[in-house]
Image 1 (cartoon, rainbow, N blue to C red):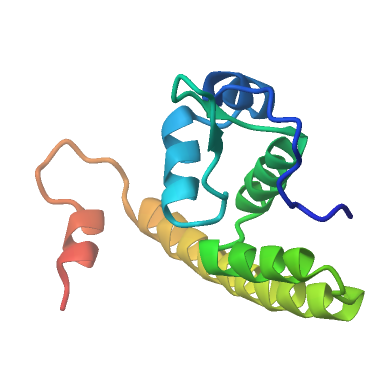
Image 2 (image 1 turned 180 degrees about the vertical axis):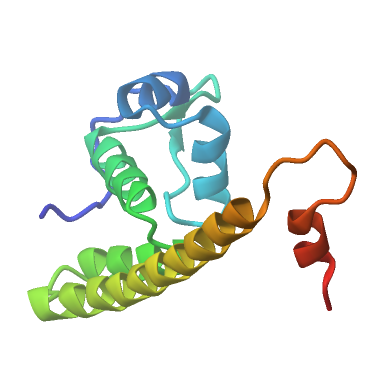
Length: 140
């Protein structure tokens, strides 16, 4: 994995960076604001200029978000990469912790699915305003 340090070949505008990564311009601004992306260099006219390393870093962040990593988990992974001498074991530890969180969410979703299926099964769809789903959801 490459080190995501700023290269000297800044050639992309924010719009071009957005288009190449599929990441919304506002999201790029946000990632800069929360320091996941470094502040870009600027042209003499004040335009933000991004290079290949920014493209690679943003793609990494976007993929992590697609996999449900939190911003803090991404920050931890980027800190390891930026340090340059990270071990695979360190990356594995962050990823394993995230997997445990995902597995817990899946268990919670399965529980919700079972409850919702039962609520629906208990409801015969009468035309009266009496509804077992509403009654069940209203219980203390």
